[in-house]
Amino acid sequence: MASRTPTALLVAWGDGEETAFDELVPLVHDELRRIAGRYMARERAHGSLQTTALINEAYIRLIDVKRIKWQNRAHFFAMASRVIRRILVDAARARRVQKRGGHAERVSLDETLAVSNEPGPDLVALDDALSVLSEIYPRKGQVVEMRFFGGLSVEETATALEVSIGTVKRDWRLAKVWLLRELSRT
Image 1: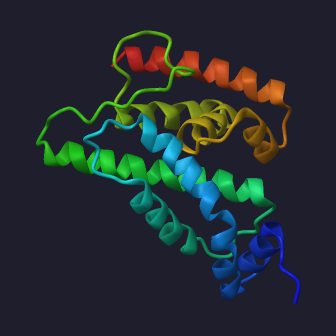
Image 2 (image 1 turned 120 degrees about the horizontal axis):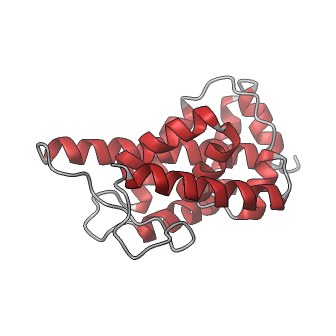
């Protein structure tokens, strides 16, 4: 039997074929590790979440996504970006609670997102601001989610959203300005 493509496996998994996920994992594992690794490289050294733990948690949560009609590989990685965002924000909220009123751990918005030398916004504040941005400008919110939390390139984001590279670049630029303005208010 010939090997199926990631897209074929995603469609089969979305149609309820549970073994398709087992076939899919080895095909997307390296890509998910790269995405998680890019984000974790920006995390401070004292962060409690490791890349492997992040990937494992993402797999667990993705398995729970039932009957989604996967469109293609890019759609899967867009969803994985959303799942990774939720995991990281949940971990940041848990750290905030553990610190009993202390500030959440600060994360750096990589050099392409940050426009100053000041410390980056905390992850919880970023998530809150991103939620507001997504309500007003849904596609710009998706671009930030995929680029910042998912570690996708401009090209990968354009493919996932089925828009041009120029559109992603404009959305990314405008979203960064909007988010930095919102985060400076807190």
